[in-house]
Image (tube, rainbow, N blue to C red):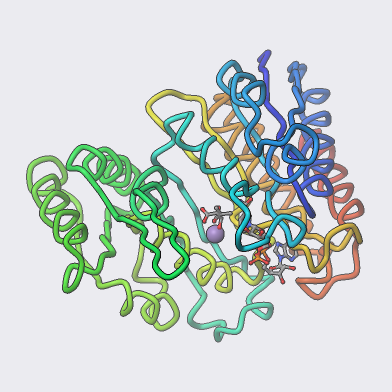
Length: 354
Ligand code: NAD
Ligand code: IPM
Ligand code: MN
């Protein structure tokens, strides 16, 4: 029996809609397993700007620091998107990631056979795809010095040896626990930071991960290889911006943005768990959002921060059972609302747990 405190940051757009399903699933899991989850709801992003004038109020960060895990829906939206505004919802998420020291963002991509038709790729390309992108999350262009003048702008990309080593090590450990293949993605033919990544990663692999099958791929080519030979990859490690872009592309292997979960981890067990998609302003407030990425993020939280492996497995099984039976939202060709899809997963959950 586990007692855990979970910070709940619903955020903007579809964030609150998918978070409602996450909370209900946690209620079901607590009831079935006799666990107690204390949910502490706090504002972030645009909602926090509206309420408190700041995308990451200090109380929100403190709550997250004191929690065993953090769940986040999504932040951002056109209301806060003025190009000249100094305060943006996205700063809340970036501040949270760096404030909690979450340098490794795990984004698994496992297309389900029942959804091969939802992907633009041919089914034979998707058969057997099972990869994880380990995206560096607290460095690079996102966090470098910025300059914004009327006629000139600058985003500096900086990485240190220590920042590269810790995330490559995390990816190497993961590869060792999986199929033993590690791919570094960089742009070493142009970028100095990429040349540092390549040198540090190669040294580290030679010293500590010589058992792995290691390869290096340039990021532009990787954008192609992800579509032409996705089964060749196991663990892909890359810098912050490349990981952001490649995983939205990879979402289309799975069939929808609404299917990809993520775990952001640091040195300790406390992680931040969120779908890779955004606040989807085009469908927000209409109960059209697919809650599966959020629910799969809850499963990653149960496994990686709360040590509830069985419950995580049951939740994942319930999600994939629903998907197999066509109990899905519109993005996957179904007709269920967000709430109905979440309820379908909970009802499966009570069946598989029984
Ligand atoms: P997006 O991921 O929000 O949406 C891209 C497309 O995917 C849209 O057509 C959307 O309807 C669809 N989609 C996304 N999630 C879905 C779901 N669960 N179910 C069904 N369809 C889904 O990306 P965007 O439109 O480029 O960005 C919108 C806002 O979200 C921006 O303000 C951006 O900064 C923010 N954003 C936030 C996060 C985050 O909070 N982690 C991530 C990405 C983007
Ligand atoms: C993501 C998002 C964020 C990112 C934005 C909203 C800051 O796109 O989580 O993938 O770029 O990291
Ligand atoms: Mn993104």
